[in-house]
Length: 255
Image (cartoon, rainbow, N blue to C red):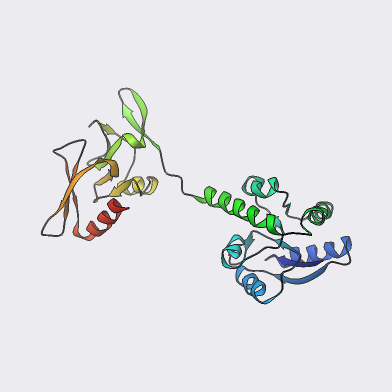
């Protein structure tokens, strides 16, 4: 069996190499690589190994980048400190992973699983990689606020994102609802709000205002290059978009 080890910690790579030799003397370790870049080059210039042991966090990035740059059909056993939830897609499809430090007993179990399932075909692996990458991308998707706390009567109440018309900074920061209610928030700056809202739905119009895309009624461009926006919640409310941000605003509306 020809094996490739991808691990950026030299001691762990050597330990894994030694354990593999103790478990099965016929295993040949073709190379021990420590980075995404080195792995991509090796896979592009060498025949595919029978099995890859791969750490997730490498010296120049995450190992999933390898699959985006070169086709990999070889079965993979991950050696990682990563949590089980993140690689649940692999577990369902019987591609194993080993937590560091690698236990020899678990290593042998993983090798036996590989021999039982993946010695004849790597087709299943491609689907597993797709599931894992989708799983990781979903976890890495930024989470934007869907509710905002405001003062109401004697307490605090949440306002859902779709009920927000715009945020306005005066002496304090207000949340104005689609029905025109002007509610006090505890936010300190407009910058703070800008970082927590979905940029596909909210636009930083100027230093004082962030507007919701669903509240755009009409807008027109002035000779100065500025854009005047009228909101649905208040026909008397006009928001100025500076000349510098005019193109960004039009691109935002058009997406």
